[in-house]
Image 1 (cartoon, rainbow, N blue to C red):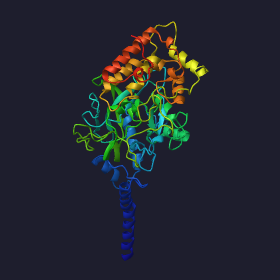
Image 2 (image 1 turned 90 degrees about the vertical axis):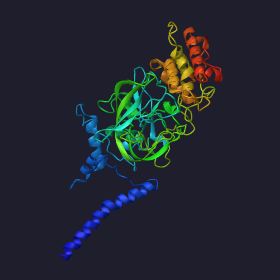
Image 3 (image 1 turned 45 degrees about the vertical axis):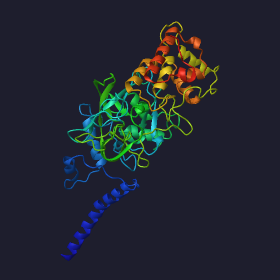
Length: 474
């Protein structure tokens, strides 16, 4: 009996070491900026707790959750397990794909929206509470609520299309947050685990970009959630660190509902996986007027968020050292002309092709959308402006949509983007290549003049007032 008692005590002590000590170490590591150990995802409700810990079953939690999330998002979709599986790999030491972990700006892969056809993607980074947040007076409410099962979050998100946000403006995907396991593995094989073998660090397009652009990432989805910087000026800069349950919406499936905000801009519903741990809200806590963001939203609401274990910064895709992103908002966006002057040969083959693309068909009397888009796109994104400003989201995107509608079908758009990338400037290819203003037809000059007047009326300084180009004629 004494020997049996000793054996049992040893066995119990071993079990305690297996379960209590790792939890204690993980908690300590979490409090020391995640010193290499994970905190496993907590169950979202009592039902999950009971399933996790019923006698005799200690499953791999990532696999357990991935299978249940997959069964929900594929409900009503023909079973495609042979070609699709939710990514249950620990993509970093700090969590699985749905934790939306990023370690450095280079983890964000740059993707170019397709040209010649309509394409949409979702932005969920600012979703969470029932009421609007941010500094633009017309920001819509974008609630995220825990589902009845407690296994995912239903989030209201922005729908962005290449008809309203031109395909010259890239979107970004966190390589650690790709929810399609096969595409994740192919992307890591091509781009490396940190993403630095693909754009923007190199010119190689990541496999996840082509999968999203052809809507093959998540079966049954109308579009997927990614990151775009185009709304950053509508929200207060900075981030707010929290620790709780949150939605990891990067690459989550989204669905059209026909819903729009007060400005007529489309909103979509996204089915985002959930994770328990530290995260950062993608906007500063101070919302002006004495209002503060709260980590705990109350009820069943939760934030859509991401986590950087080292800096606690908001999502911040970075271009290669010493470069910038053409046609992107300030901080990482390239400046307006005359930056880049002298970097291209106006008489070279590329510039001749660029000017031909801007000019279009000489026999046509249509507005030359390449010129009108350059006259308003980058200034409505905030380049060359005195920030912060009081321009609303509706005003910015209303002008942008008018100026750039149809540019996704412009032949030679890829060459225009190439010239801007080499020159390191935004909305500048016609100026860099010395395209003759004599090629701008009367309809286009009139439209540019109207767009410039509309920008001035809402507090945006057009290129004409900044560098004397693209002024148009009434």
